Image (cartoon, rainbow, N blue to C red; front, side, top):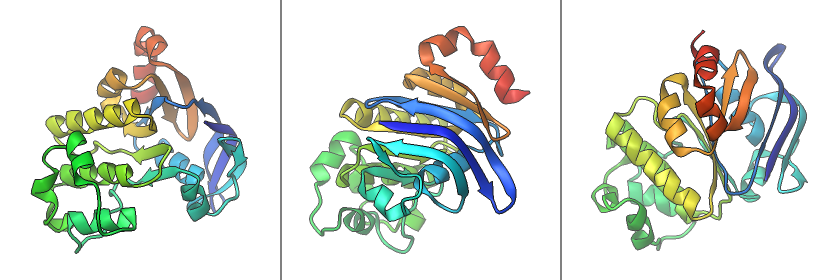
Length: 230
């Protein structure tokens, strides 16, 4: 579904991504972990063609998206959820969902199947939600959009272990229903990522130092910890 080939990324004259190569198959749930400053967010922004200048090639479903504008990449079916969640503050949860869907009537029952508590949040302004609730709402919006691939920037950073488990439960449900998912997380989330994903990568200083199946990663856990924490 997604192929990243020899990707180098730059902020001006400063190179932040170095020769990154990996592939995501349809139906995958992938986590890429690393310490702060490893280049994880820059990788997602490169896929969406936000802010960075880049060399290399990015292909989505056979279409070269390397130089496409961000809105055209999104229309192909890639949803990018930044670490802030990307919600419009001052609007209610319901209004944010209506904007995402592009219509006033939305399928609340469908959302309730994934997150039964959604009715408690619908009439609350999103700036009054907890950090974890905002991230949950951001993920739920993907149910209202024609999306094939969801890429998320640190969806569990700064939230409680209970909400972290809830977020991954939701992501697993979306994955089981056909959404392909790529999530980047800090190294401290390695353990929970390994519980839920089928492939895992490790980034360090702008390089993708490791990328393989979770089955293999569990056998090489000490290597992953060394790459992340040393």
